[in-house]
Image (cartoon, rainbow, N blue to C red; front, side, top):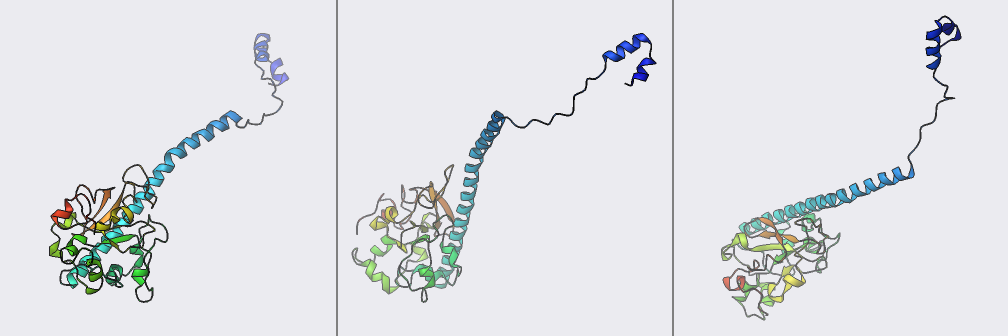
Length: 268
């Protein structure tokens, strides 16, 4: 208020106005920044949020990889069914050097289908000429049922493997009594070079990867860090199965009742 304005007021009002004068601040004060304690609280909150969100993100990524793996096995299963239809109802034989990846190559030409996205970058495969047998030589995550009990019903136990490796004898679709509960393809260990799973040689333990993917809160690592793995069945279906459920209480790699209910392989 100006002094001239104050002088024009009655004495009583002048005293009231003088008492209401706003003291000078001497200029505006700069805004204060965060204190150390406030900064530490913010960092703590961010750490807690990260610890909650990162595992959920990891599980979501693994779930996507598991689904992609199932899709690979589904396409290989469809390729196998087309092969069976074109070969008088018979599956791929347990032969060398023409193995099952080469036999399915014309039905599933993309070699990337042979590798599970959760597996290591270059999973092992056996020795094969990449020019003559490119699919057999490609990095591979999957292993094919060798139908041990079926072949042992035709040939001597210690000789059948050598015999069928060259004679082309293959199991028929009609010989599989429970196709929806019989494994055709599974996931192998990253360092396994085997094309065929010989259950009688305990390869469900030494070659088969039964825990590649997470089925719950754990994330699979591609090296046995999960709770189960993916499989293709003889009816063309694909499923995630928890650890051990393809060999116990029923052996889903066998076709005969004796082997399916034996609870373990018989040594050759």
